Image 1 (spheres, rainbow, N blue to C red):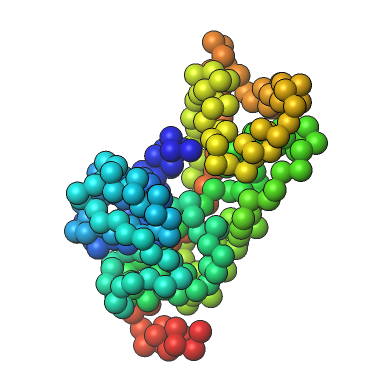
Image 2 (tube, rainbow, N blue to C red):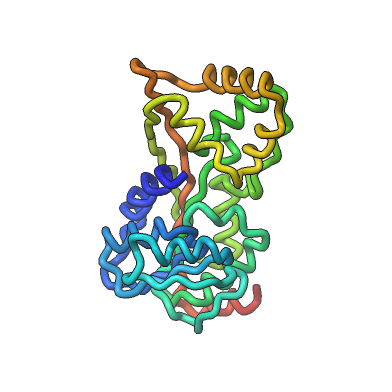
Length: 257
């Protein structure tokens, strides 16, 4: 899904409109797509990315942000940083997957200075408008019992807003981001959508050859196909941003939470 991640990150940063020379924390950085994008577009003073997966951090450390950003293994629910260490704490396409989101939000707020920004964006899994939406819809219509994406309900804008409100953040704003990408043909789409580590790929692998063939036909029927066999469709992410309160009242709310 790297191509989708790279497409949505610049639009999110344009909407976020971060100041130059900001100290950034990328929570759940994955392979470093957001970190690389903000290094290219927003002139940060410092970028630190954290992720609990060793393999993701290893890849991010070898990626295009290597040498300009710092990546380390850490958990969003227990960030290894002092209070008010960052100007911006952001999460890209990961917040719905965090089991204890409220705790993670409290940590993001804690390490962000007063007046700083906390932000996130997630694919709209609730409306099946993620990049994998066409495949999942076709599999369900085919009769496959597809497991729910973790945090599907929490990917809605209303759920994101409630999460930020409960973290006692202020000036909360939301938006939707739509990106449209094309695959050169069905084979290009199929390979991108079925990496070996996906649960849906394992389900497909357990089918008979005849079942897989019929499923692929069903998926083809779900996809918009342009002349030449090009497959093009859009995905939608829900984005949210807010400010850490400067007031004493905001600090008191935080202590009571």
